[in-house]
Image (tube, rainbow, N blue to C red; front, side, top):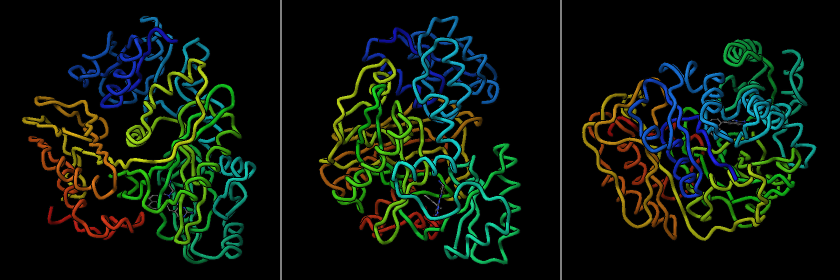
Length: 447
Ligand code: MV4
């Protein structure tokens, strides 16, 4: 087992990883930018190394600084958390070259799933259902129009280097194609340095459902059921829940087996997530695979009683998984508490938290790095806490979530708490019958 893990991240996830390391008897090294000097991850780790100025590029994305920090502290592994370097193939490779275990996917696996057109081809080979569309990248507008007419409009063109919504365009007729093509190429070239595009049938008003998987170094992959991430605004998830109100035991088994087949096809090692769209007929299609721990992993932990960070560390150390798939018995939901003003387009609201009270009680978990007196820097994402609630039914979860939100006080900055309170009262949300388009028509003005 590792003796010392360096955490190449900040905020709640850095703290989350430190907690598990402490329980496992593993020493921890925090790295921090000058903006995070007063952060809890710095105080709770056994050692801390400053790696640069506030900008992410010069600190949490600064590979030479982070490798140096690992070398001088004698860390034998690096946990990248989510975001930052967690899906950076070059970083995974460099860690390997330096003899430091990267707790995550190999460079090859990151590359295989990071290029979305390649990932789709891999999934087709593994027998996983994918959305009908182009075979690989589009070579011209003419080819795109031809395929669009074969499968029928609407279609969507996506950046092969993208994910999470950037570089995508929906096209509803031939006449729009050229302009959408030009826009998507421009946007993806600028954002990713790769302007390759592929095309799919556009699935109208789907649900976004993802399967949590864990693979070990011996080729074994198991699934820990799904998370429903349909409550999103502009590709930012706000609420996630498990199990999904639209996933039957039979559908769970089929999606679980598809996710396992896809991951096993690349001998996937570690914790990963296979994302699917589920359409109105209940048919599911592979969308992308994330080769990292995700923000919303705690809801899966709550219902399965697995510590997913511990599982990541164990498989990275070469310990085999037990290999049991999971059948849900409990219900869990996460509300993302962001320092944003939901009344004003979710505009970031950095600043100092003057007063704060965290909720607690039965079935309530808060993953957060903030405290009264903490100043939220403007340099990073605005998520300041995850409120995770677990109970025996979806109805009980919603009642408990509302109670916990009512106990949650944060003064000094605007937060998404008023939005979540309103959502918990919303009839359509409570019914479980909604799609990824739900928040497009939500009234945020009266929060
Ligand atoms: C789609 C789609 C409909 N049809 N692909 C959004 C993020 C990126 N991962 C892919 N996305 C979508 N891809 C096809 N063929 C609809 C979306 C989409 C979406 C997906 C999941 C959750 C929220 C969404 C909001 C808008 C669009």
